[in-house]
Length: 413
Image (cartoon, rainbow, N blue to C red; front, top):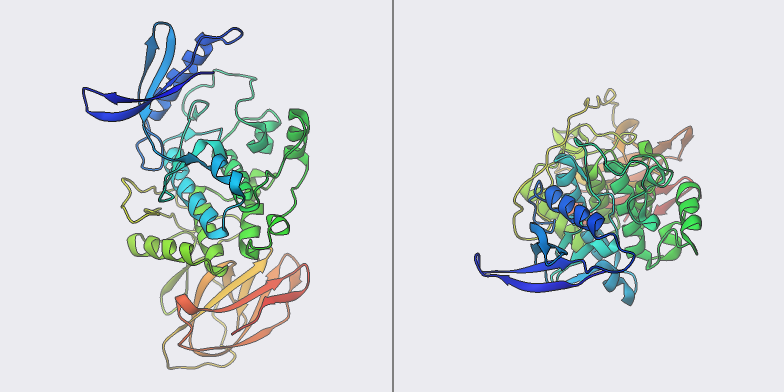
């Protein structure tokens, strides 16, 4: 409906982008101008390296325009024309968007139109979330009562059914984007809008791992949880989604995300669902969709971010009484046990509950340990592992169990 110009701000000597809407037959210019004004007002509340900055809004000779940061790069939609991304690359992008959403949600802003064409990436794969034009500021009334705003193929079920969009609706949309990035196709393709909306509300898409076997099992589970029909079954907030992605990627042995997670751990105190497990070492644990501690999300690139986000604290999880290890070993440096289950489950080591999967590193004393998983009313067989001090966070001993097939997915090596 218009043109985007690259221009120079002569007063501040900076390059900017100017989005314009050209008057056309059948186009309500007044409504478009109002939308651009709302975009500028919303974006004025947000100052984050992962969000495209809006500088000004106005009209010139009757043409509405908005002046914004000029970001050199391509949209994720354009990049996916060449096919799906490698899993570690897709997660790297999603982690950055999680960071941007965590910040926006903390400011009371819901995007409502998270999609691959609104995610821009530069040559170094730094991501920017753009177009808050349909965003809703939580503490202000909604002017579009009864209107459906957003893009149907990325819309959360509650939003598609006519309900209000909230922060978890954004997380569903990001789950759709991640599915698309991993598989190269949308989970709800549909031939028309009515079919797409029906599928969004009623149909579970084919798991991404069945579309692309390169998707690690743990990552497959994280994506499907993000796209749960019931908002209560999704991640509690964007930082919980980010931590699950990082842990799943670590379990899937994706080197690039391992490096990203390493930077996050060095620069922040990762406290999502912290649970003391052994010798005072905290390990991130998910407990039925809730978290025990807030997470401050740090930079996902070498440059530090301008701000971190602290999310509300919930009640801490109290671990059950400590059981006596099957084969106690009093000496030696702790080893690292990486655990996962499909679907997520509680992991038990030597009869002691160690929290929810996935976990990249459960610290245990070297020696023999018996591991089993419990999900709903099901329990896996016991699996004995030999843990050594050579099993470090970078070389953890891995155990994973699939309740659907009733077998362990990976061997302990």
